[in-house]
Image 1 (cartoon, helix red, strand yellow):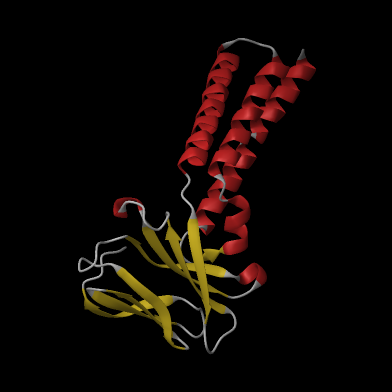
Image 2 (cartoon, helix red, strand yellow):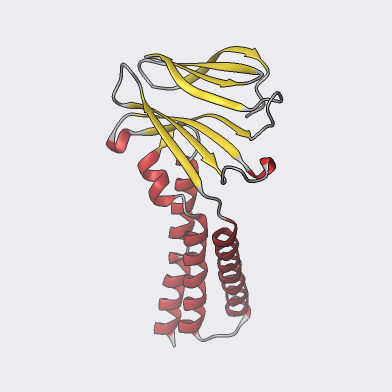
Length: 202
């Protein structure tokens, strides 16, 4: 019995590892975070599901239905059900995305990425644009958020283009205005340095 209790305790304690990995992945997925770490660890559904599965396994091995065993079983089971539910919803509601990558004219390690979510011709409200900058290579590569916006009707802020207007300058243009971002030569961090008209985005 003690042997089972110890193994169950180890499994329950191991459930903290996926939670820690998920926290690291979420942190690195922020603007300026390391892309390699975010790609590997920013998987909350998978990692939270793994943590829940470890809790359920701990209960099965421990085989003691005291307060700790019941509480662990409830938390683990609810975690698995939530993870499976979110996975199904994501799979059903996943929108196709069209991605364009534009290298900087002066730096091979800087890439402007424009992502269009949703099918062209679909309802305007279901479409969106995401503009980001990728800097560096390998382990040091980072992703910077520039702008995210919903598709707009012509004359109301419809997206027109995102392009390099200089080796260290990016201009995002809509039919009602534009925003200019300047990329720092040392860190690669983009900063909003100019704005004309109205651009509906965050």
